[in-house]
Image (cartoon, rainbow, N blue to C red; front, side, top):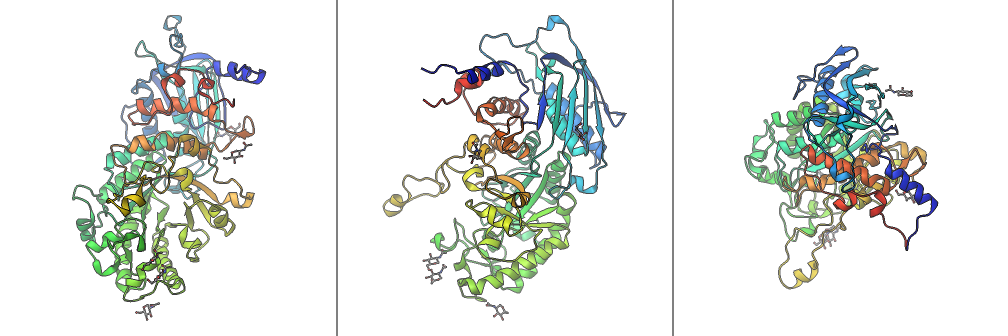
Length: 582
Ligand SMILES: *[C@@H]1O[C@H](CO)[C@@H](O)[C@H](O)[C@H]1NC(C)=O
Ligand SMILES: *[C@@H]1O[C@H](CO)[C@@H](O)[C@H](O)[C@H]1NC(C)=O
Ligand SMILES: *[C@@H]1O[C@H](CO)[C@@H](O)[C@H](O)[C@H]1NC(C)=O
Ligand SMILES: *[C@@H]1O[C@H](CO)[C@@H](O)[C@H](O)[C@H]1NC(C)=O
Ligand SMILES: *[C@@H]1O[C@H](CO)[C@@H](O)[C@H](O)[C@H]1NC(C)=O
């Protein structure tokens, strides 16, 4: 039998005190136990100017005031409209709601002060260009104050503010039981992202916008859209209309230039920078449907000889027609993306050497022959990106497997795990970590390939995918991209991204797979692995009740996030579902 030791007794006591369940955890948070009610006629000021609360206010342009005003509207709607009565987070039969008959102390004012001036880069920053820090206080008398350097910091603070409140089950009362509150907060990493894949299965614009909302609530700030791949090309390029006409799965499964701008501005208004990837020179077979002369190995079988999954297809690496096509493509696309993004991802993963055997201009799979051709291909592609004022991002194979040289401000996205992050940062590259062992959220759900009877069946059985097991929120949460790095190397880690490769993801299961596991990486990257209060690794036992609560908020706000525990646990104390070493 387990009997509580002194230290677990004090943990028990701590767990009985309600603590604000802010997700991601602020760098510093103190709370009290007074109840304050949020007045629906709350007066909000921004740098001294009154901002009336208009339900559903949408910013008309990317200016500080418009962005903040829309942020206030969303924040208050998130409190007043989401009807979040947290019975699931309290013990069965316990009395946990404030007694309305005792009268109300109201929060009547929210004073927002932005101490710095936004720059054009505030809405499309390079890593580190925007200060997202904020301080938030709510006094016992009901004066709320939010201070930040940038309008994006204001948005981060407003989200924290919204997470202090619950709706009363009696109806139109919204309260926080945690006054007085004091928060000081800033992110640990500047790049906190989610990768979506709109080529394996299409995602309609509405699903992408909902993803951006949930990202902003999780203080995630980069949406990486892997927009094309060998399977489909949904992106309409007006100067090359045939590419999506032939390459989209269906005329309805396309993004017009207006859709792209809508997605980017929707993100920018929420402090989520949306950037795009057109993967190449592999992962581009779909171009064969409109321009077969540019592509080798399209849809060849057995696919294993030519690529990682069907259909194969790569650009010819030494071909002037490919250059002309890419000039035209990026002259059209990049100037439209650049107003809302600092980055463009040029791909570069999983190029199979055999493809160039079929290229009449090369006919070789020898690395020594291919490497200089790939170097030229990448040089030209990165020159196009830089000419548009964007910074290129590539997958790790380009510098590590192919040893292509790139300017040191190129950002490298690492996914293969092992020592890659250390190797890349020791070479001086800035790195985004997407280690598949931790941050690939599509993994561990079985194969999508099918297997004929006989030898294939025997090879495939029991039909696991390549990257199982499933990455649980705990595994996602505890991964530290700077573990094992020197301080110098760690400085070059911009942050990370979770990936939702979409072979078996579409709008029906997107939310359940993304959330709240992407929120777990939100805390890993915003708050950091170490809890400043203890100087130790953050504890899963401490995190679980907060993530349970945040999941309920996601659901209340219209996102189909999965439960991470059963109601027995969410209604209990944290330790009731804690594993105790026997
Ligand atoms: C938050 O408070 C700390 C401590 O007083 C101060 O150093 C910092 O500048 C404040 N930040 C903002 C954005 O006001
Ligand atoms: C290239 O193709 C040959 C068969 O021609 C195959 O044995 C080899 O594994 C392939 N290489 C790769 C990297 O797929
Ligand atoms: C690349 O193309 C040029 C021009 O067609 C040709 O001279 C050269 O030999 C090719 N390089 C390789 C490695 O095949
Ligand atoms: C190159 O092609 C030859 C002949 O098909 C094959 O045996 C060899 O495995 C290939 N090399 C690589 C690295 O794929
Ligand atoms: C902290 O967590 C990391 C994994 O993120 C782990 O490698 C390390 O051993 C942990 N440290 C302690 C003291 O538990």
